[in-house]
Image (cartoon, rainbow, N blue to C red; front, side, top):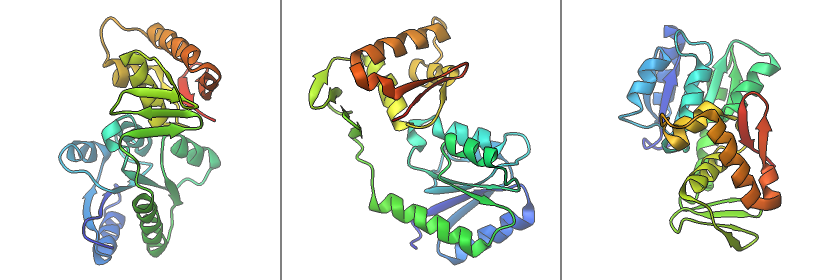
Length: 228
């Protein structure tokens, strides 16, 4: 494992945080550690990791909130996330995965096993680099440079906002996006925009996508997600 791989640890238990930092550094990782989510969020504006080991039960900003913040921004899409928690209930795992966590480890755990899981995730990323310019899902293909969308090879015409909305949903496929998240990330919280505007644009986007518009699933009372 080379020094180019940066692992950030967000854990409020000092002994565990220090143990993880020590062991990851011994494996050749660059490591930064944080006692809370707020300091971590501030730091990644300056320096980005390859992977985050994230405790679910943090003081203040919870691990789920931190994960939600990471997955709400395109610039952090290439960061892998492993959740740590003392909870073992299925619902906690499901919520973590829905928010975009890549793996889940329940305390107490083997540090050696955690490091192996980290290496597996990083290798998977390296072996399957994402194309920065092309997004594909089933019959849908988006060329981000050419600003073109096609279905089964046939181009469809989208407005700039519809294009941005589809890109946002595609890059977060399988994850629920609340109306507020969409307002913030697609519209930028314009004072003239309401959640009803989100629903209207989703409806128009579905119509233009035809049958593939069914991939955009409504989560009643919450928002939308792109699903197959």
